[in-house]
Length: 153
Image (tube, rainbow, N blue to C red):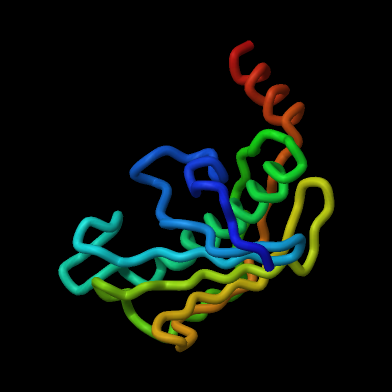
């Protein structure tokens, strides 16, 4: 894997405060590793930390960042994508605690022009704290434009 020179804001079509990841650590054509540190100001923070179900969005954003790095490397614009779902999100903790540095890893196992499937894992202090297989959808730009045009008719 190679180090990532792109800021996370250049890889996701989100705006603050909904960019939940801090940075992409490294990536290649099949996988990506990102990181987020839980702070008292993290989105979705509760008195005892961030609920573990938010890990699903950390994973989804890592999948989006993966697509963003591939697009940027190819000189293409970053496109919007959607989490379709998961059949199983398994968390080994109830919440992510303040000061936890989470590493979010995603590995592509299937991809066509619009659909993708990723094996995902979140680690804290070298231990797996959550894992899932995500299905994602990234429509072609012309499909998004056609749908938007129909909505305004």
